[in-house]
Image (cartoon, rainbow, N blue to C red; front, side, top):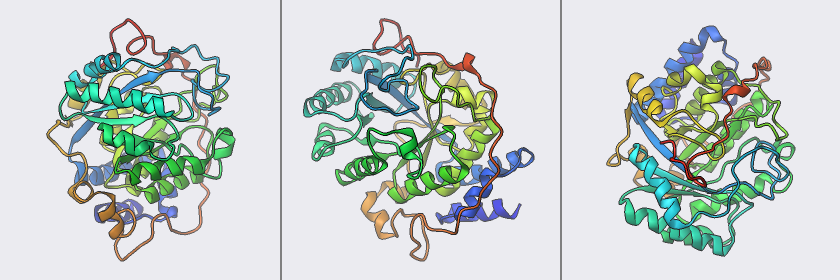
Length: 394
């Protein structure tokens, strides 16, 4: 297929696909799916080999959020039966992190519900980062605390944070349909604050909220322009008790096409399969490892994932290997000089000839995907790990 040959060539050169090419990936048929996976897999292996980075989530504060993000079980007005608790103490969070690190994770993601941290919250998280790093030398710590105020990213960096996560989630055009209590621009501003403080930026999307193919392409091109080091791809978990509980729009095949599109647009970036992979990829999860080079181990914030042991077996059975703590995740040209050197190459370090990030032709409308059958049996509320007396899944 000429399209796939072109995309592989561009991916190996770190060159931007056109919007038409990205949309065409989403519009490929199931008959072409394995060809799409194989093509994107060439790009993935070129930059990341067969390594799979493991990340582990610790939910520092669960539920009771004042924001109205429609996809979130912790949102204002949610009736989802999730765990609700206030801040974990640093020692409790360190214990929770230890389980994931023992399972092979090299990055711990510290997450707290809420619009954004107060200065006191930043102090709490700083103490938690210290507790984790005192116990586990060399561990990567990523904070995800919501919208940042001036100076907070710098304080987190000084406390030892390596990265900050704040997802764009969906396109700017549709953001107001998903959330009304803050704006898309607020999210972009927080990613900029993380970058400016010297933190590795982690920013991604949520697929399956009823968006069009154009919206998926828009948000991925916007992410490329923001130039995060890591792009988590979440697949909506339609929690009962949230406004999007009836949005079952994803099939395993569509999830693979979305991951392939992200890989072609962001060839040399850590692409992470995040929440919802067990619900929507199901038995095709091993194929997704040919597209993404990073996953979460064990459970998520408010939902349960498959057993950590099953994650490790899946990686081995698919012919991949867990990335060791001694390995640098990113390719040398991204890891060596930081954001500044990538900007000198043309914005995101992914263009030849001075191309501009996120520019291409007019959008192409693809046929809307068929609605998937609901699999509510696969949505399990987390009842173990952080905030409980039960052992975590790692």
